[in-house]
Length: 514
Image (cartoon, rainbow, N blue to C red):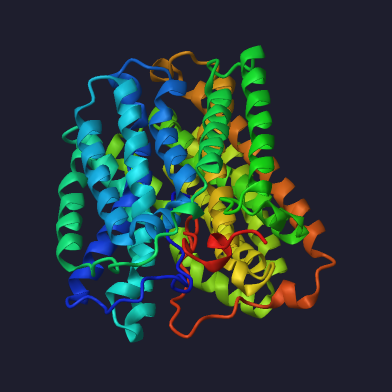
């Protein structure tokens, strides 16, 4: 799914200043930031068919409107909290809001697809700061006895953004046009900026700035790895060529260099030594696989609903709401089942649901229409919600309690890698299987053929995740398989439906290697 805050404990190094004199207004600004970052990720998907027509561009080019945002957020979400430590969380959050508003305005006025993609990348930079630092500012903005409720509100606002984005995007695309998708967030972002400037407590004067704790080399290499990987999977109009192979080789080589750099860094962006834990390693891989399947429903889904089922943009937006709503509703029951039956069992049940839902989408005749499509999405996304609740539990019990912020950052990275793969690789499978050079002119049967191949692959990915999760957890001690993560007294319940936001300033992230 698209990004959604998953709240845990307040970050350990939240500035210890007095809460805001107007905590309600401070919380309103942080909630708007969480809402806008989530809407920014989910609202543009429904406009992809309209963008192919508006710019007379192929699917592979238009999908970069989604990819650019994801790449920017993925690259900076892990280190955004440390930017707040280095320059002050309030200052960085305000800068993120301003960047998001300006980039949204530029995207709305973009005269070409290239400029639109560039504006979306800049918008993602602002969103990364908003997602990470809105969470980290909670402890400095509200009284301690209201921290849990405040964090729960941020998670709820992010989940609302994930569910609201497709429907709002569909209505705007069908009405005033796709440009309004980018204009509408501008006044909201400016309102959040004004409220934050007036009501968020100032950064501590004279506080030490851990600027040496930044990892610019790791951040740059991560950006190169993700950009080259996405380019390799979108180049060639669905046909794999020597150019794609070369780019994949370059991405692999750069990933190797990233691992070497991170192993030697005093303040690494990624703690790769945690990957020695087989349960965590399997959980991260499974997260990337099933998130790719979910992203395919948001990138391939609009084209299937538009060109195979003949729905207009407004109804496409409503259909795309089904998945986020189901995931949000299934989150609490999934958590209770994890408590009762154990994380390993619920993880397997969820992955089975992802595989079955993908098979339903692959086997679905066009004659089943929107009802058949929605039924398959319900099964798939409910399975994802069950898997996520269980997998988060397994992952967050990996390692020492002081490493949970680092593990959360790795979960972020795995989810965003899945989102990028779903938007690029699954999209490439769709266009290749449809056999269409121009989806706007493709016959419904050709589009349905592309959908069938995409979700057959999705079923295979779900099955692969199920097998590796079973192998990793079958000999795991009962404590790891069944225990929940101990909750902090003020912590709010987790909300599923998207990636966790790391604890940006957790000690394990900001501490140098010994």
